[in-house]
Amino acid sequence: MIRTLDPKKLPQPELHNILLTAVAPRPICFASTIDKDGNVNLSPFSYFNVFSSNPPVLVFSPARSGRDNSLKHSHQNVKEIAEVVINIVNYNMVEQMSLSSTAYDKGVNEFVKAGFTEVSSSVVKPPRVGEAPVSFECEVTEVIELANTPGAGNLILCKVLQIHINEDYFTDNELDTKKLDLIGRMGGSWYTRSNGASLFEIPKPIRTKGIGVDALPKSIRESKTLTGNNLGRLGNLEALPSEEDIKNISQDDEIKMMSQKVGEDKTTYKNQLHWLAQRILEEGETEKAMAILLLAENLY
Image (tube, rainbow, N blue to C red; front, side):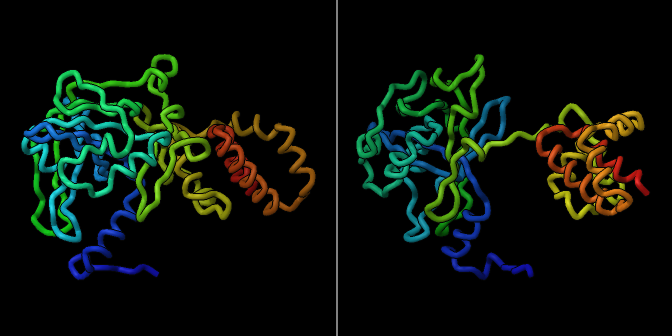
């Protein structure tokens, strides 16, 4: 059963919780800014992402307080000095980053409170975080204030002027996702870690045109074994296997043994072929899995 809610009828804290729990994980912008008097501020924001690579543009949003409608110091600072360093947060620094989110009084330096190292930037006034794996020195090109109500966002558009990357996070001269060990914001007090078993790869259908799930035989689309993810991977194939491919897979030792065990029970044999295809598909051998499924299709 689906619960349908009208956001206009929800209390702001409840709506805030639903949005931040459902729209996750969110990357974290660890923003260092400076006011006109030279006071440094360091604060994390999970309303954040990259929106363009040419020109390179990052956007983050320090929302108004849901309690007293006050503006974040970062928001105030970039309106005085239109510069920011956006530092990327990984697991090694997540507890210190969380500490810096404390609502300290204006003028308090969160670098000091959280124990981070201030490093002078190359082209902007705010310092960068020495412990960050990646830091982006940015010019603030626009501030878009969405409303003046509690919880309202304020989009800060940032043009990247300089990038600093710790060389420990490179492999073969490329920034390495596994080494970065980034963290993401979830709802409530929850975070997620982009490492180990939580990382997985999917072939990207950018330069190829997959046949689509609709091109798969009906019995495969309606398989009680295959999941939606399995079908999506199969639909990413550029073409179905040939008759020769299907003939060759029928000579596979595991499949021949399976056929001998079930004898004339075609339904059981087909179900086992679907199970085998799923296992092989999840091992990354999509063409082989598709050939097995078509072998099952040819039983009838």
